[in-house]
Amino acid sequence: MLQIAVTGKPNVGKSSFFNSATASEVEVAGYPFTTIDANKAIAHVNTICPCKELKVECNPRNSQCIDGNRLIPIELIDVAGLVPGAHEGRGLGNKFLDDMRQAKVLIHVIDASGSTDEEGRPVEAGSHNPLEDIEFLETEMSMWMYNILERNWVRLVRKAKSERLDMSKVLHEQLSGTGILLEDILEAKRQMNSDYSEWEKEDLVDFLRILLRIAKPTIIVANKADLPTAKENIEKLKEMYPYVIPCSAESELALVNANKSGLINYKSGEDNFTILRDEKLNKNQKNALNYIKENILEEYGGTGIQEALNEAIFNLLNMIVVYPVEDEHKFCDQKGNILPDAILIPKGSHPRDLAFIIHTDIGDRFLHAVNARTNMRVASDYELENGDIISIITK
Image (tube, rainbow, N blue to C red):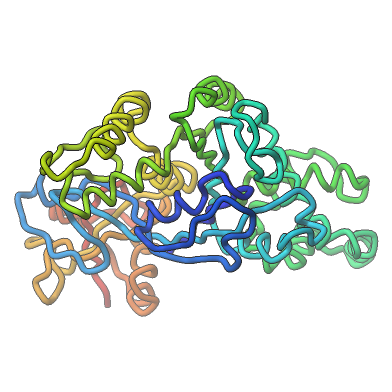
């Protein structure tokens, strides 16, 4: 299952983001290190299920379908708050940085209102520049990896030269516990446009910054977007970074809880809600819902929670959703379950790749594939498209 790490300094709404995204019960408090261990729970990305288009009733096994909206599970890791100096072991730094190595993509929750300082302590709204928090996270992670390499750097370069080893492969071996791929290292090296043997400390740190942007792409969740001091900061963030999602984790949590209580009808990711039991709402609850509607849903088109998850999986990781079936005529598996599984797979994948994701034995016995929508055999080099329904034919 794909893993996303939710990270950031203390007291920015990180655990509220995690709670609302996963509907779990992680402790929330306004002081550093509330989250002592990395919490893991299931969240979902959503996409349009083909069931409505095909006019069939689906029977999901690995996911859910709610009114034609397919919810596909992913794993969120709630990494405890980082503080400056984490790579040197300050706070609980090394443990938290180590937790992040499991993830394919990072969601960096920041306080867009500027009402918490670099340590996560409350300050006057607008007095802290949230742009500094993004730089701080990049620095901590880069220096964490630098500490892994620095001790043996000269020896590694010398060894690679004398034994005519590929230095990129040597680096990959050294970073094997970080989840970084060899192709990520090769791309970062290409962007550096200089030889490893020429690098000083600053060059190595620059290389690691580039490598992390490639290997651990990051979405910036600009939380507390409803506060007056947030809007200008969000505009500045969007000018500097490609993936910035305005967000109010507390608003999402309030809406999710009200929906669970049967007071409103609300689906995560939507820009509106319907009040079901007006007589059950007190004055404060009505005011809170009205505030959320005006300052978050109407202003930004949603609370940002679902948008951040979808953006992370479908855009940063460039994944698509494919539906494998065994009977291409009835769109079902051998037990008759219609559209049983929704598989996340990298864009550009081929049917054989899908076969191996389903099961290595199916991949080994792969013959060809059939597009269930057209009942036509597809070529071996056919690039799967989002929403494809594919039947794998085996030996």
